[in-house]
Image 1 (cartoon, rainbow, N blue to C red):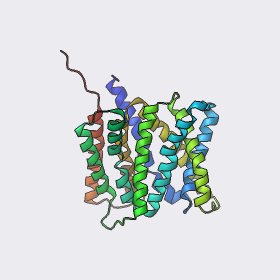
Image 2 (cartoon, rainbow, N blue to C red):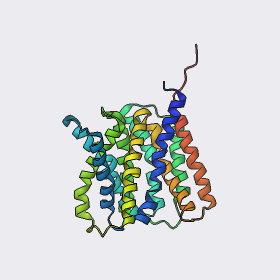
Image 3 (tube, rainbow, N blue to C red):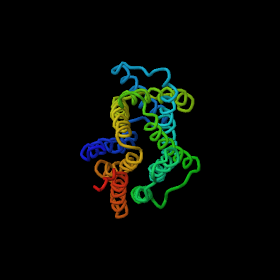
Image 4 (tube, rainbow, N blue to C red):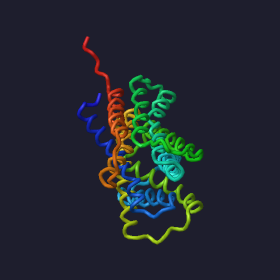
Length: 292
């Protein structure tokens, strides 16, 4: 059984990843060119992955390529593509609320695939998380686009499956190496999608470069290293609820940087989200055996 302080440190480090992901919308809208969502995903994944490969100097064994491309597809190609489709076709609140279903999906997948215990408190925390995010970001005027809804749900399912398989397959490499391999695989698969579906890249400014570097190195390589490290050291049921911190951080940044107003319902949503994250960790904490 891991030492409690070590587990707490792992949870805090892993939580940094979704907390930083919460800045993605702000950086994308303020620093990056519009109308090229798949190109943005490509430039977020491939350069950072190639840079890590150059630094690490370790290519995956041929026997692992299939699993790496499956994980790269789930965690990056499919997830980021659906994320951008949902962002363009749905209000941000609707997309974030549907994405908040990921912890519940992880619980179901771990039960069905791995036979893991489905703890009632964890299910309650997952439902509370969806409710909290809805209070935090959903507005009564939100419109529901069918394609956007499908994309958001597929994105949540893709990330959930990728989280479970990352732990189940446990590739024989460090989390940083696994991150590099998946970023390159996901980026390579994004390349033809960007070429086919996006318009030509506009002229890139210094501001755009700063945005791409931030999303690639900080919002991509560094955060996914922490995420995959957390999956390896903890378990998917513990890690998945931390993803709720992403919309939480996005709202905080909107208040601090964009000077947006926080309503009473949003304040309640913040409390519910934090409570659900805590309950999700508590539900999955190792149970100490009572002495005989």
